[in-house]
Image 1: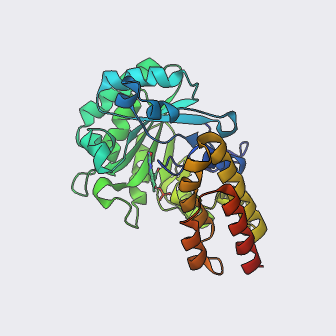
Image 2: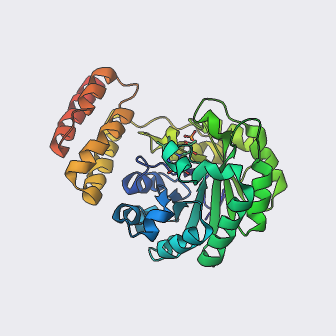
Image 3: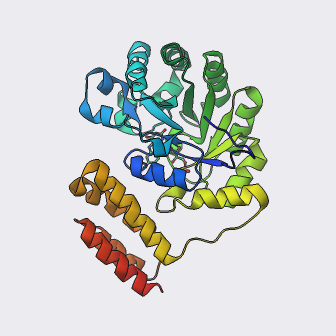
Length: 322
Ligand SMILES: Cc1cc2nc3c(=O)[nH]c(=O)nc-3n(C[C@H](O)[C@H](O)[C@H](O)COP(=O)(O)O)c2cc1C
């Protein structure tokens, strides 16, 4: 996976987001200069049991490459076997999820549960690295289970020793969930502690937030999640600002609505119109944040059923925002 460099001009990657950063969104963000994509988390157990939905999450388009498939689970052998299966889809790297705080994933023993069992976390990384080689393996994690148990440095050292090729640190504990405020010092500490690339993540909503994370942590790249919801252009804004201080404005209302339609059209291509339009409701509402009439339009987004309906709505939004 490519890290920040003057040559690539990519200073930020799109974060994996289950139910949000699907193939359509990942492709669009890559088009705006995101450094690479990571898939929505897929259950290693689901893959091992042949679950169709888990396999769908491993599908990759060339337009989103470099692309990493993300796996979660708590059994080293099952994780390794799932990695082997994932490799059939030709990802550019495999990412191991050690940060997901949702009850379902925690209950399975995966995601941020592993922050409480570092020997097991290390075993999982070792097993996946052995199976995936020569494809690189990255690990995405949080700073710890709670504030009394910050383990970011220790897990980073173990991951490096186990053969991880890079690390992404979402600088919050599991019990902080998504509460505002991240621990930039923990990213700096991890960066100083290992020799592999470190990607900083958390609360980047503007190019200035990205610059601040680089300045405070010395990280090799930053990763943007919620800041890219309904704003795929944030990657070109971050890249322009970090390259030479250029502040790019948001696109025009025409371009915004055009991008929304383009994203949803792709979603419909991949998932069919019925599912795509239901999933598109939240994306459409994100694209409309801050616009004139946004509250009313958001309510209409919640009723979207067809692509034609979305086209009609975007025309009304444009008219109200000229
Ligand atoms: C809706 C949603 C879904 C997420 N799904 C995943 C996931 O599948 N895998 C993962 O590693 N992190 C997932 N995350 C966490 C993000 O990748 C990221 O670490 C977190 O949102 C912090 O970054 P941000 O402040 O830029 O949003 C998700 C976050 C959100 C908001």
